Every structure is written in structure tokens, then in C-alpha cells.
Image 1 (cartoon, rainbow, N blue to C red):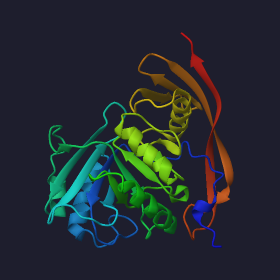
Image 2: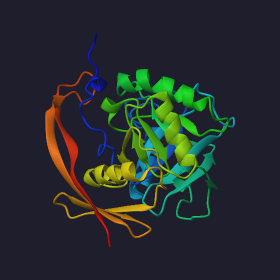
Image 3: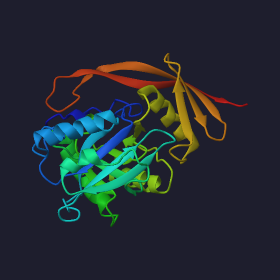
Length: 286
């Protein structure tokens, strides 16, 4: 049996979410390259303009498509824009007739675009890593079968394909790995109910890795609570503070531990990995 990057399962999930504060998800039904700008999706000048537009606004560009490639309105492409910063989470949908229109989207106008509810992105980019395609597509197909509206999308490379199947729930940016169908369903259903599921949770994309691990630990203690009820902060030396909106505070000690080298992507040489360990969690009783 061929060893894949997702064969290594000793790396703890908390603290491994790709660090991004915002997302620009562009509907595209054609074949994808290794990343949104490596294929034939955009003309070179359009691709450069989109890349610059996203970079100036701190947005990670992803290509998305409906499972089964059931496209949107003929001649129109949907563009989903998410802000994942705690306390500022929003998700808006726009439609464009041409990709060249994307850099003109009025993202600075908070009333522009159509407000959208939580969506799930499932990485299926086989050009980047076979694990995402083989393990992600069945998850996307099954999850999409539960919703009539377009709330489940296949997406291009998100980072961390060694944790495939990978699911990102927007707008909050909570990221999941090694999910089963049931866990993916739970993650999206919880988000649409206004809370965060913790099974398979890698962390929230808009906060640093140590804070991600601490937030996951506190969420596992609390059970299902909203995405923005917790705020995290770090002293940079391994102590993370997690604050609940109701005034409760937890002090979490997070340490980094080196793991044996492993493939970060199929076919790559093994490289160093790191685990984020919770070595102390103290609740402030005041």
C-alpha cells in the first residue's frame, strides 16, 4: 500500500489551521492547477489584478465549485468574501459576469453584496495533493446532499493536506481535519445553528497556532458555544489567555513539541513537524 501524507495520524489537530483572516472564494468549474493562479483560470493580467486586490485586503484566494460541478446562473460566477476576525465575522456573496470584474467589487462598503449564512469548504484539489481529492470528494458529495442551497463547496488548496479530509467553515474560519462524514455534517450544522463543533477541530484560522490550540481546549470544556464568544491573547512565551464574553477567563499553558519528520505532502521528502500541547489550563474563579 502506498504511504500517503495523511497516513501520519500522530500529529494533534489543535493549532494546525492555516492562518488567514479573510477569504476570497471564486466560483470556477474548470480544471484547477496547484493553486488558483497556476492553471488557466485567469488571464495573466486578470490574475495579477485579483492577486493584488486580495493581498491588499488580507484575503486568501480559493477557487470553489459545487460538488458534482453544478454551476450557478449561466454566464455568472459567484464570489464569496469572508472576514474571519473574531467579532467582525461576515460572509457576503457577489456575482460577476467576468473575472476581470472582481477587483472592482465594493468590499469597502459593508452594505454591498448579499449576506450569506455559514458555508463549508472541502479541499479536493488533487493537483496539489492526492489525499485531498481521494478523501475530500466523498465528504463534499455527502455533505452537499443534505442542503438544497449552495452552502457546500469543493475548494482548491487550503493548507494542511496531511490532515485530509479538510473542511473550513466560513465565515468564522474554524478548520477541521481527518473528518468523517458525520463530523463534517456536525461541523456545518453547528455553524448554521450559531455554535462551533469541536470534533476534528484544528483551530480558528484568524488566530495564531498556540491560541488556536488553547481555544480548542476551552471549547472542549464548554461544549457548543458561538464562534465569537471567546477571545484569545498570548504573551508570546507559551501562556494564552482565553476570555469568554460573560467574563470568565482561562489561562492556558501551551508548549510546542517537535515530532518525528513526516511527509507534509504526498511525494515530498519528510520534514519537521510540531505539536501544540496543553500542559496547563486554569480557570479564573473571580
